[in-house]
Image 1: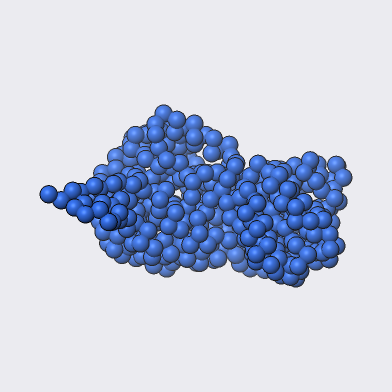
Image 2: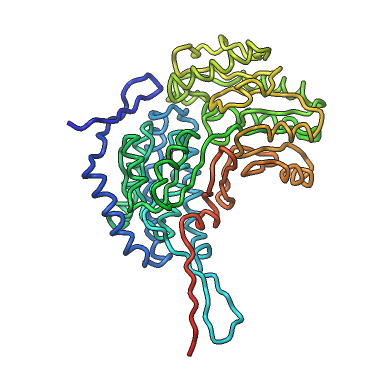
Length: 462
């Protein structure tokens, strides 16, 4: 019997899903079918592609309650929050379908008599997508829908924590009548994932995960010339200027740090507050954080569920303990959260002050419900500290001065600048990281550029 992949739910550490790993013959057949299907699909019109994919989105959403509960059971997000992922899925999928005609249109070069010249966007071929568990549909839809709209075939390898999400995609595309072979999913070991990346049929790999995982993807792709899209780690900062709306900043930054137990690619992980607002900000932040209810994510009253696994929670506990050992002050009594239990994935939120960048909690990705808050005296100090990181995914500014926000944004080494919001992906804007947060881009018309290659037509009339 073939080895199986087991998904352990963090709710009670029981086996929730079990699936056999793909055999070598199944992997080879999948890649062959994808290449053959894509050779025909590339000639379908964008309108034809849009019709099928829009139908698939409709079918997918008809199961949204079922899929939302599956998310909760697979990775632990509260059932009160999982439906939001369905709304985000629809927003991104429909937007990327809607802009495809314009984004993929020929680029004409005019004003040369006797010649017709244009650049056409050609699909790459087979796109391999390796998706994570934390936002299992939102992270994968960024690549799946635009890749298909651009004329590619897609093979999806989802996280071992959320395999049912790949099956949800498959059911929707099959029911919508997408030609066989254009979208397929595989349950793969790490070694077989590397082999698929290196396979000659695969032209592009979109990976979302850890920095170590990104290096492994690059290593697997070394033997051939292929494109890579890598969204990796983050330690996303926020800066609260003295002219910020304090109540708005507190409410949104607590949510930005604690939503999904802090397990968001662009979660707020460190906050810098101008000294004029620091004390009031910290008091308000702590007060709101204390109101969270940690518990079973299937309880509709829970708004803070378990972390994805015990080891992840223990890592955050160790970060907190190390920071306190080196002078940080913890402002939340974890004992006030009855569900918090060492040795389990259930972890109380924590707010730390008296922190600095020598502490791992301010420099290494936590991916959990903990936040360090530092006092700053000026914009220059805040900018220096925000840039003092090996990561660069997003940065959030809280201010009433749009012009100053833009000036500060120009000085920040990051992929996205927010003002008075955080932890959100706008599908009209490119999602991109710098430094160890990755390379390449998804979403927006720029995302289509990553999934196609230019072909120039230079036609001379005789």
